[in-house]
Image (cartoon, rainbow, N blue to C red; front, side):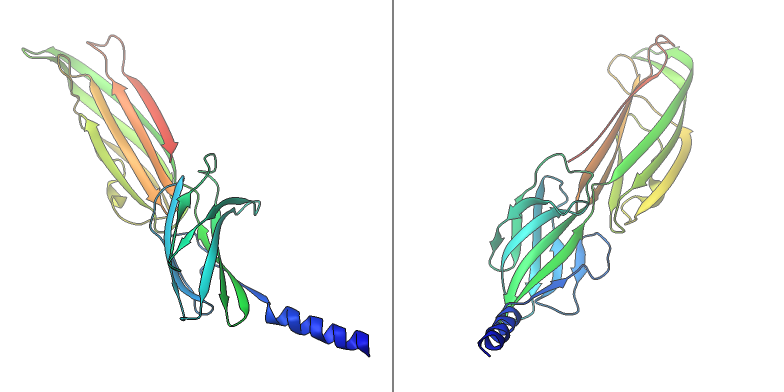
Length: 250
């Protein structure tokens, strides 16, 4: 009889502190998740960084207390960072480097009515940008101010994977001018897309118009990726056009 009573008490104790797991409702990584049940109605990631997270959440009642948050490697379930919670609504903190291309989850622990909840929000890996281009030049002109090519033809192909349907990208000319590589998706949310473009380019420089520099920047809730191409067109076909390309996430 004593053993039965002890078993019943143990089961009641376990029930009193039971844990309920609430997963990301749409199963997609992104900026927002809306929950139909549980202690949190919405999670929103406000940062666009792979090294720093800023997020806010909204509780469903005055009795809900959410004191702990973690960022987890979604591939291994390893805890990457313990993040402080401010005012039962805000989460901020730094993330370790080296995980820019890793999908993650924000895990929030909440207590309500003698029950513990673990709420998940999926955070995407930083965007991926693959970008190739070619420059063809002809008709060198020794101008009175600077030398330049009369004809510069630009051909580009790019693939962007934002790893989330709400990722955003922008294209900018930093030196000189080329056709926009992502014109059809400039400032429009999209998950992934291929781009091709061809047209006339304009170079710039002080004494020789030989440089063309452009960039693609893509952002999502898990980070920002910047791809920069810098063309040196040379001087009167010596040397021939040369491209330097750099891409990194942060």
